Image (cartoon, rainbow, N blue to C red; front, side):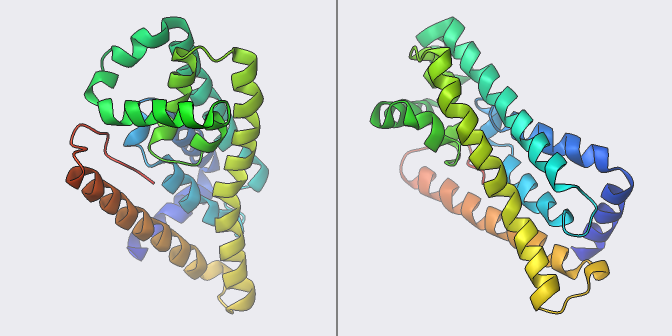
Length: 218
């Protein structure tokens, strides 16, 4: 695995703009209904955050790319729901995922306006709540008043852990910054946890009659 990570780190160092574009697309696509349930956007963002302490990526640009991608993804999904109302919830491809759509509606009814905020941190329904909010008639001003603060909290919550963890490994564990060991440890940990949680959620849903649900991601 480290033989793959070293070329990746070197590539990002030489083409940082592609990493920022990847962060933007990861945040954007995981907000798209159905697509967002299979795109591991959060995992990608968490993993790439390890490249900030070494200078391969710059923290302000990482946060900006993730936040703009999430805002455009959530906003697009919301406006699709807002224009088509409940019709969109009964249209393809959402009809292939009735369980997740139902969970999103229940989540929305349970938490009301705050569902838009909380859903940003809860996969896989975060890919369905914005379109559900629009379909159920939430006003645009209300949606953005909750969604923008949620994104501004979500982006640092997914970027700073990697930055702090890798910095701590360099500072307190005596790992050399240019050896990439801290980056390897963080990335492998993120990928490993994502796989375990993803498989656990998938097995849980299969055992509880969630065969029509979207495959979960972390």
